[in-house]
Amino acid sequence: MLPKVKVFVFLMLSACLVSACKFLDTVETWPAFQPTIAPTLTPAATFTPAPTETLTPAPTATVFRGRQNTTNSHWYLLVTQERSWRTAHEYCAGMGAHLVTISNAAENQFVFGVSAQTWLGASDEEQEGVWKWITGEPMTYTNWAEGEPNNCGQPDCQPEYFAMFFENTQQWNDIPALKLPFICEWDQ
Image 1 (cartoon, one colour):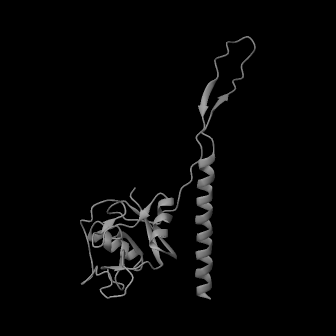
Image 2 (tube, helix red, strand yellow):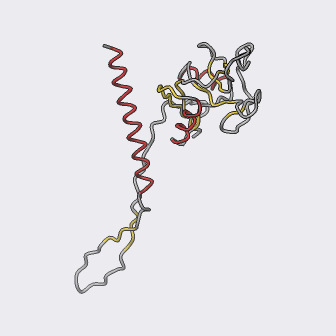
Image 3 (tube, helix red, strand yellow):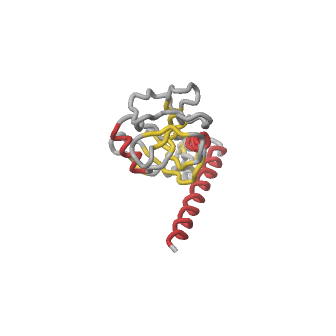
């Protein structure tokens, strides 16, 4: 019975997320707000001041951003639907976020607490052995497991261009293009 509840909750959250994305698309097509002229009622024999303009702001949608890390004020949303690294990257970008990046041990621990099985926003696909965060920020902190990244370390393996946590530890591993859950991160 419990797995059915989890599936139902997941489907409801997914539906809300899709609705929110469609709402954002709709809001972006709305014309810019226009001033509204407020009528003034006055007696016939008195001076009538000129109408004043009142600006009515357009409504804005708020995207659910998951949990906030109080040490850096970033927001982290776990998406449990498994996707390839590239698709996960595009999904996060479409929400105004990016795949999770890690800049220090405290953030590494926080992200691991959100999910021990997730894509990290790092890749060496552009140049083998040169790992970069997708945000372009410098990779000054790393936490590779012993012997990692190793690009499989075997002949006849698929290239391992993408990073994730290593076997439920807070250390990292390079892996090939599989499908995994992922975390979107907002820097503000």
